[in-house]
Amino acid sequence: MGNKEYKEIQSLADADLTEKLAQTQLDLTKTRFDATISGTASPKEIREAKKTIARVQTELRSRELAQMSEGQLAKRSKLRFRRRK
Image 1: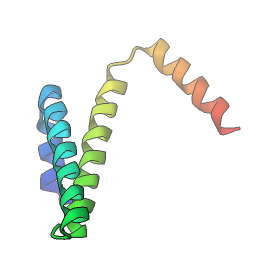
Image 2: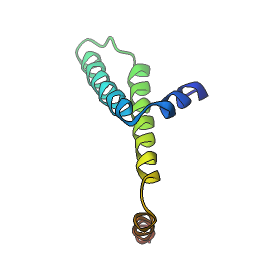
Image 3: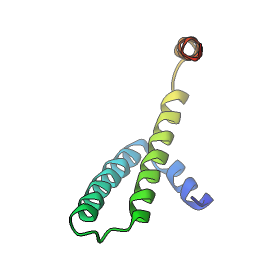
Image 4: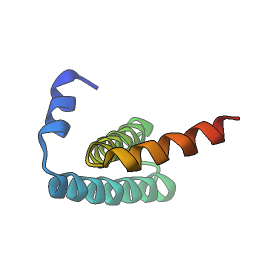
């Protein structure tokens, strides 16, 4: 992914990101269906859609973490530390 697309995802509002996520998931479902039925979809399209979904979800999660309070972050850190053992 180029730097330009990354900046584009970062500049979108939360509502726009949620909409983009839903649209990309719908496109992925349609592409997979087309690939299964007729074999016309290229694997590259499926791969790129999956990567876009992951990028949008990552950006949404990073924004969610940025809005957490210090107490919530401390609790989250304790949980993550326990899971590593």
